[in-house]
Image 1 (cartoon, rainbow, N blue to C red):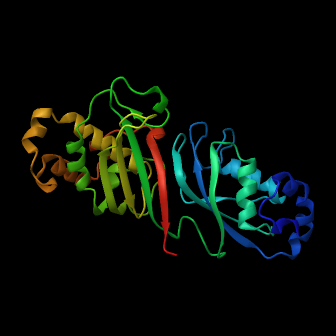
Image 2: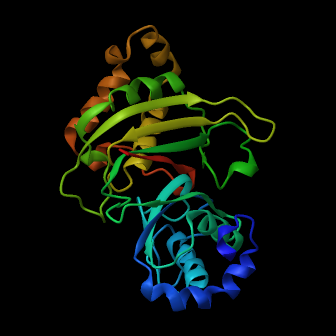
Image 3: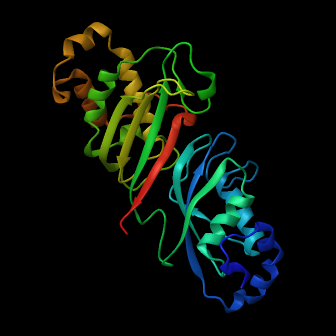
Length: 296
């Protein structure tokens, strides 16, 4: 058959979609998992919107062309407008006989260049990208150098003051473990509980590259994130780094993170469960969904 060949012309898929639609009533429903990378600059987030482009709607429109089916794509999370993804995970159900390899090729053949499919595979019908996720990892980038690099303006927070990395690192250490993170939750998407577990956190200045400047990189991996939690963590770390003078930081050098006043300040903010004590919600365009982990 035509579709057993891996090297295919995606136009042949579209021209033959009628044959697949005719046979679909005899095909069992299947579940396809896809991994996606996207530049969120020109999209109004992941979730479909009535009057603005979204990642979800773009994927569903292309799948309709490929399969002649009205397919709903479920993502592992709803990234906001301007947020990017290095690896978002999504899944959809279909009666199509197309193999995962053909879905991979056909989607990349018709999607815009700012959305790419990294991988496609068939999974059990019970697979759910949200409920089955064990952890998610987010990255936040900040450019605090002057002059800032204009190339990065849509891909990091352009902060107009130098930030002290040791302050941010000491404060970030208290984030580890199980806490009530209500202080980092924005209104608009309430959860049953605001308790989450952070498995890993890091703050570092990444080295210059031929194209990009030296940026501050914050990474957090947790079993789940509240609405705007990662962006507020970034804003709070910046707030603490900004509020501490260089002389104070020098005095605290050499102490362990748990002995640092920055660690204690973060502890107080989290214990308060008070959103007004935390920092601002950092701009969306500095945020990246890095990875979603599953048990299998």
